[in-house]
Length: 106
Image 1 (cartoon, rainbow, N blue to C red):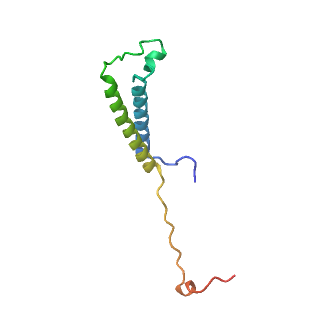
Image 2 (cartoon, rainbow, N blue to C red):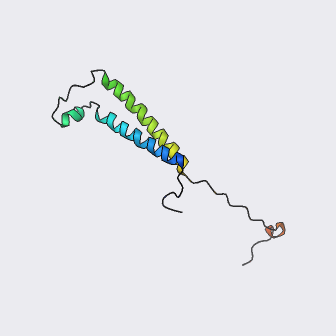
Image 3 (spheres, rainbow, N blue to C red):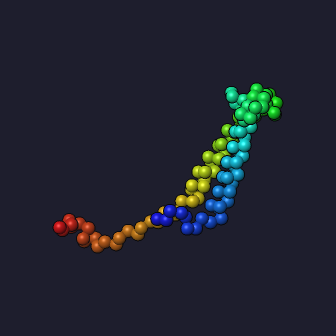
């Protein structure tokens, strides 16, 4: 079994690109949120208690973060399903029915 996929295909590359894009958006949304410690602005000496997007922006960013994270998980699950190789079913051995009733000889 190879470590990396030999043939990913179009959907594998497309889903990986979408996954990277959603990941970057999710990181950006998380970084601009105002947390208890003041968010990213407080780390660089900015006003920690105020939000650049208004006082109601915290609720909106929380909802957007949750929806984006749910979409991210869904895309990962679809990506895993697409990237798994197809299961190969081994053909059943054609045994002689007369030999099936006899015990194996040692």
